[in-house]
Length: 222
Ligand code: HEC
Ligand code: HEC
Ligand code: HEC
Ligand code: HEC
Image (cartoon, rainbow, N blue to C red; front, side):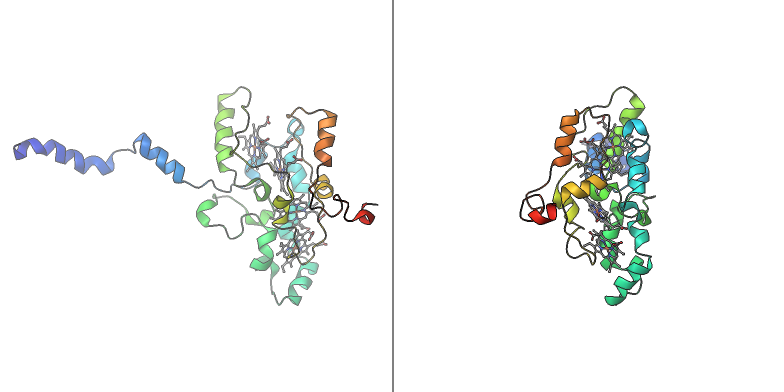
């Protein structure tokens, strides 16, 4: 092969880095991109209004949305002072349970996410960016929603979800009964068709490790 014949090939090699990503590379990049935390405000568009169960409003009026604010109250400061913590709103020892995604790497948090919004949807449902993208695309296309995929967004009625924070490391810990506490933050979606009986079954479901429901603590049941 004469050196002249090689020229187009060499030219191609030099251009290579400037070519757009090939689909395969695109896929690899997407697989590597973390499923980021996007914040409760980003869920509001699709999870509010009476036909969707007013999920966002329920959360905003509930205990979790004010979890960060609570750290600014005199009671919080009193608790913190005993632990020699100056400002609970700045201390890891308090923020780790009073905020979503505390200590999570910045690249896993989308711009616009509000740390001061307290314990948000994603503390229980996991990072929501992937779900957001899938559902946003689908809503643009119109039509009825397809069923939510198994790994799309977590929905677990399970005491472990709550015990990440509702545990005896909390300075104000009280025994945790899943059934009772879930009642206070209930947010079923009416788009899921369920009979009254099905709903009752869901509402009554507890976990064997609940001292009240397991019968180990009969007195407290009354
Ligand atoms: C673009 C619209 C859209 C956005 C934004 C959105 N969702 Fe959804 N979500 C949906 C739709 C549609 C469904 C399916 C509803 C149904 O069952 O008919 C759904 C279902 C769910 C479910 C139930 C899943 C299941 O398996 O039953 C959870 C939990 C959820 N979303 C949480 C979130 C959270 C948390 C956010 C914000 C981080 C969020 N969603 C943002 C559209 C959206
Ligand atoms: C292990 C998780 C966890 C940590 C760490 C934590 N909290 Fe909490 N905090 C909770 C939970 C859960 C509640 C709800 C009440 C309970 O404990 O069951 C709560 C409730 C509170 C309340 C409201 C209590 C009431 O009765 O009104 C205050 C005030 C508070 N925490 C202050 C603090 C301060 C200050 C710190 C840091 C020194 C802190 N918390 C650290 C999980 C935690
Ligand atoms: C990321 C930490 C975190 C997780 C996870 C969490 N909570 Fe909480 N929860 C808190 C904090 C902090 C408070 C106190 C908020 C305040 O008073 O400002 C609280 C308060 C509450 C309250 C009102 C006070 C009380 O103790 O009765 C209920 C009810 C509750 N949580 C239920 C649940 C349930 C049910 C789950 C699981 C499905 C759960 N929480 C998961 C942090 C968390
Ligand atoms: C403290 C934890 C916690 C927070 C915060 C929370 N959820 Fe949930 N969510 C749950 C649990 C647990 C379930 C499953 C309840 C069950 O099956 O009884 C659930 C169920 C759902 C469902 C399915 C409802 C159905 O009818 O099956 C949707 C949709 C949902 N959540 C959206 C949200 C959105 C949006 C937010 C924030 C605005 C949010 N959740 C905040 C714990 C939480």
